[in-house]
Length: 153
Image: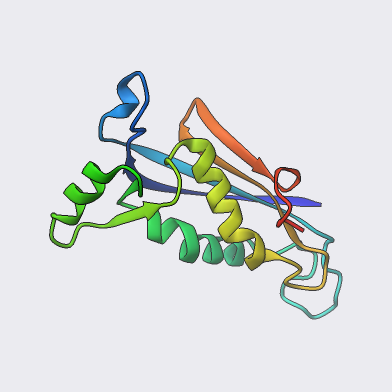
């Protein structure tokens, strides 16, 4: 059985070598979908019986480890030195320096890498992260699936 929880956040980024508008500093209203797969819990008296995982717990983990750190931050590639240095000059600015260019594909993969170990078999019901979908705009998104990575299961 699969379940999905959607969360939204705002963040800025730029794609340094892009040939169009995305090379400029700009922001997006991102949406993050976390899809988990596992067996439905069937244990009388448990508050999560009939569920794969309580949606509020799915949300809490994704909020703590991805959404809160990235929300209202500027996501910048460590190799983009002029922007890293500029953001460092702004007192109190929320900057997240990444080891990769912050494309939708790379952010989806990074979110997957962060979240996969946190959801893994939490309840003994063979729970695992199956997919992270990151919407950069309502019409553009990237999927990172468990089959794309070896760390997933």
